[in-house]
Length: 261
Ligand code: B12
Image (cartoon, rainbow, N blue to C red):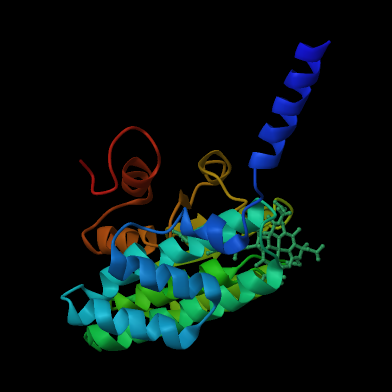
């Protein structure tokens, strides 16, 4: 009897030992190891725009490339935020504040990079009809602009008709679409079919939380992009003559890497 009681006490102690982490403690476990990147990621998590800029200034002063910082620090910080949101540790207002701080950081990096004003080509970007999630699209647009492309941003919840009209008017080298909802991503197929019917053929790069490669492969112009950083890589490949089939071979997960190796 005594032994059973002892076990009961031990089990209780174990439960007591499992302390619930605060959001800050949970985030601290996910930050990058590099102190410069960590400071930026932490400022993104806290939604502190001034601290993000301060962190970026310090990293640039230490020799980091401003454009590489978008991927290596800003996006890493944003991933901490979305991961903790998924786990129910933080809530939507936190995500929104962090997204604003991250977008501010991207603008700063672009300005610091002094990227050439000469444009390499025109790209139309949009968020699927019915979908208001535009953070990923804004990152895609910012990275494309930073890489020297002219971006025509059709914004969020963009009607299919407007996408078709913009492609006819702007004659872009590539169209991008972002969808975060399993319901709205079907607008991409409609855009594809309307383009094909109208005799328009161009790579239609699609991404966003809800989208996956299998879905994108169901329509002829579609190329799946997992990360925002894939968008400028796709555009660069198109400039070098890549077709939609080449882009799928390079960016879809068939074993090779995104640099075509
Ligand atoms: C922020 C957010 C919101 C904000 C959006 C603010 C804004 N301006 O975007 C607000 C509060 C408005 C919102 C509203 C809603 N939301 Co919401 N939201 C989110 C949340 C938390 C984060 C999304 C996000 O911004 N992620 C970060 C960005 C950077 O990711 P991303 O867009 O996928 O982009 C990355 C890649 O995919 C890639 N990428 C994106 N596009 C492209 C394009 C190309 C070409 C390439 C190469 C790459 C690429 O680049 C980015 C970085 O690498 C998610 C949950 C989550 N953890 O994802 C839910 C989530 C997307 N929302 C969801 C829902 C259901 C809603 C609402 C319907 C809620 C409601 N009942 O009202 C409404 C939608 C209304 C509507 N009609 O759209 C669901 C969608 C479920 C589903 N699969 O269908 C999610 C998944 C939450 C959940 N788990 O249920 N939401």
